[in-house]
Length: 315
Image 1: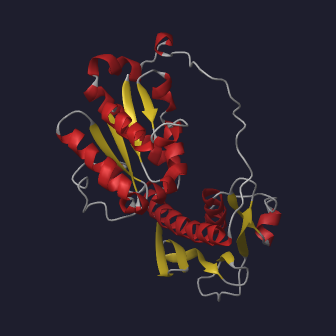
Image 2: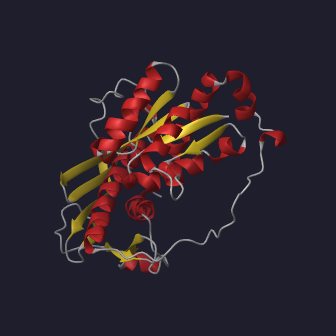
Image 3: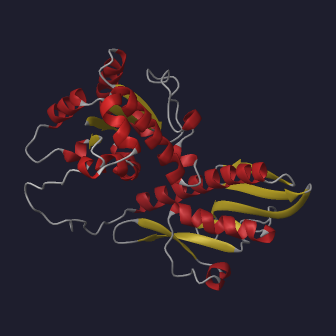
């Protein structure tokens, strides 16, 4: 069994959790065992535990983001030692690009990154597609590291490869507490949601254009708080929208006209605080007509809803 080490910033913990979920199949096959610093038990020395597990690992995933590069511990300690292990052949280092950042200029910039072409996971309309690419790269690395023991397990899992999980000390899994969110966290979430939505529309328009010969599209980022999207059929505009941050509701607004002013919109979303997470909620007539007015949406769900308002004229 190979050991896989996550080197990441705690600001990217949610994406790390999602990636670990996608690695579940090969974990269940007994091919890999994963480790990250949240597994450090009470009373154990933080840096010593990290150093020991990093030294023992044969695959090291660098979860790359601006936060990762800005972290002294991630960059100066974990990453530097990981590169040394990669160069001396004791580990395979795989940069996983989470968010756009200047990673090409780093010591790991020479390594082949994943997802394909170093496209950040946050720019994928569906994160699961990106995570699947990462899993496949991990599988390829495993086959190179332990070809005799791993190939059959990766491709054809057997009952014997699945080991029962032994819990040495029982505890409850119900440990999540209600979280309080500050106004800054709320504002940050709103800005991040708008950036996610802009990336979602840009990549979705590109894909729509590729798949349909009679369709062409245009995405335009007007400024940090506004973008427009236009869909043409045989060079004639058939659908368009303007999406912006702020405005009358201080949320994310949608208009079916690219020339609309910021106080005129067809739909708007605001940030709502749940017990454990922030989410988005639509406020306008379109959501009521679709029966979605009570739904709390993720960033992807909100983007899909606005995308449906743009694309419905073509469907």
